[in-house]
Image (cartoon, rainbow, N blue to C red):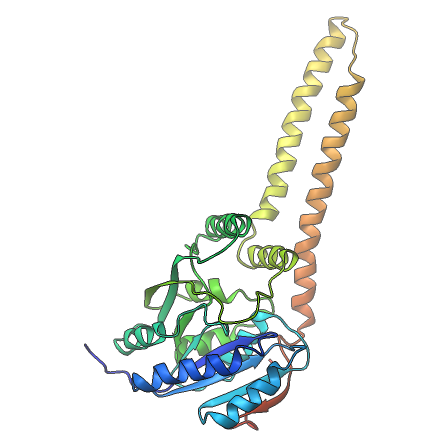
Length: 320
């Protein structure tokens, strides 16, 4: 194996109300990487947790020499946590994984070895989603099929579990958009790709922080971030309604000429309801994209770091 690349890997671990998992994650990942003789840093990003997550991160940074932490001033979301980690990952490569160890940390070794051979982006691909409800599995599968079709990127079974070379990290870090979709961005930037298959593990502690409402909002934001197809569908609906109205109008005109009494009050009401629904959906879709444009032009930071700990704690990028 060509191991021309050598360097330190920063493992970025977003955490939101994961106090029970911090020490276990730090110890587990550290042991695996130390046994594989891989130089590493663990960078926990506390996404404005309301429990003892930050206190546990500080404790982990005191206990483990390679652990550092960032604490947000409030909850900015997982995408903001990943962005903060990438902005502060100065090592030769950086990996992202979940704090609950549902992403098996032993796969980091396989990812690192692939990076050593010259691969720039190593994607974690799920072969088994673990224990999920039928509804959650169905919704996730549907979302990734939709966004894959709309964006022309194969995102089925992908995750945030991946490793990036520093040059890829630098490009993603410098992208100006506020509402990024990290999972798809790594495909969009290109470079040499490889995949690592894994099975989703059981959470070591705690419960998922993703509610149904948050998942729906996450899906809508990410579809809008990588596709303008919903906007095009508004145009298609308008053309369809024009054709439909033209046909209906011609039928009414012919009936008038032939002296056939025009009737159908129920039909008229149904048509009005249908047209009204199409207009509301169209206005809502356009409004959603306008809201995203408004958010982008405001230029507000994706994250604000209020505290840090570990090595180089005074050198972290606090706003990004």
